[in-house]
Image 1: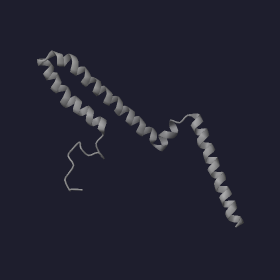
Image 2: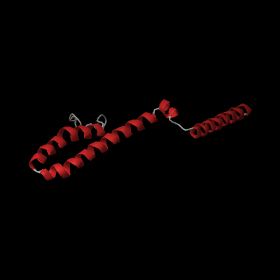
Image 3: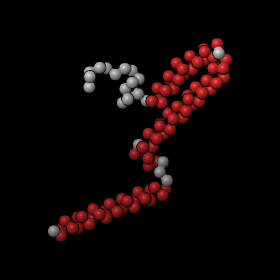
Image 4: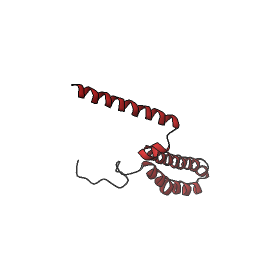
Length: 110
């Protein structure tokens, strides 16, 4: 809108949030608090485990998002469907075909 370029890692359309969080935590936050933990042992004992929990959370979130994205692809969606899903989908297709046939029959009678 304003013609101002978007800063790296700030473009909502291109930045993958989980990757961004993992990188920031691993390369900025953890080293900073590890160094501080050398001076203040309590930081090492209490804060570093929380940072590691956050890294693990975002790593799991990245996997979840990747899996979710993968299963939304039409080919993969079919590959991950249960047999009951196919039956429902097949019955839906049959209903659509019947509706189309009725429509064609109705048009030919007019």
